[in-house]
Image (cartoon, rainbow, N blue to C red):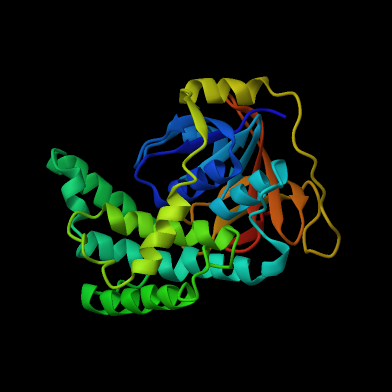
Length: 309
């Protein structure tokens, strides 16, 4: 199997989630730092339009969306499992809540109240303006909740998590870490980076201790790789991960389609349909620098549209 290449940047919460999963699995990986805002020419060469961070590359296969990336990592190294059998589907349902409801409460709160802008000290006014415009373009149509309401919501959520840990369990689902832990941890990590939120977790000592156990998994072992080297690896690849287009899912193999996120960063990604199951959609596209690439997306949170022939 080709090596794991994570395209990410340091301050990305979803990147931190995947980095912790790599640490939990004890894996080695290559690290490509991507731009924080557009333009991202090397990113687009691999993804075809997907601009969200992070994404995972294995040869000429590109995996978008952190949950799908973690599922792929779990398949590569099944033990310890991200989806313990004893947890059933609850770990995945809680992970989905953490990636959406908790995330979209914690991130704006950290920006509005937590002083995360202090981390951008030294940036030019033009850079700050470009950052704001980039994020606004990604979140068009999303309702914006003010800091008073988001603070109430956040403390309710943190209180729920504190209560879940009240019986002394080590992790959210019990004695073993699961996908739920890492999805929740990304928002806690982001909040803890905010300079003005140093006392936020004082009422939640069990949650803080839990976060210490999760963060102790670390990030595995990484070696830096340039984006050009990643493109060269893709272009040189001679095969792709096996795919199939299952019947009765509404699309035929070889159909030209677009795949786009349905919540934010909804830029369409166009290609030939080469894989379709109830959990994943895969399109093939060709780029003059990246070669023939298979771009993988999860079904949840993404919509497929056929293009006129």
